[in-house]
Image (cartoon, rainbow, N blue to C red; front, side, top):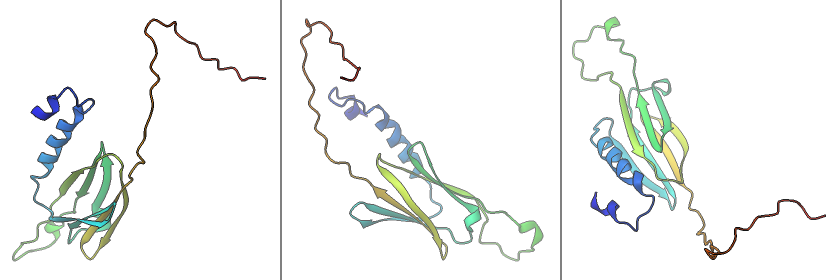
Length: 147
């Protein structure tokens, strides 16, 4: 992306990788999900996971990604179906998380998996940098405590 080639944007090398990862994840269609803002700094992701139990689901954070996986055991060999419209299939749904976003809870309720997120907003930090002369001798720092 041309915008990330700007010499004034320092340290944003990973942004393009993150955007690529998010674009790939958006192509997934199953299971359907909602994302809602539940507070000023709170977000809830809700996935429709009817037929999945808590043992069939996992929620993890992997390399700044929220990864939700579902895997059902196919017991179709033990049963005889006249019509099978509900497939026992696995899924993986990923969401790229910004720095400072933490998973607070994951709950399963009536076929809906709710994952609650919270963004910790850091206080603005101002740091003054001392300017030294390039010709001045290097200063040493005395690490011994004064008696």
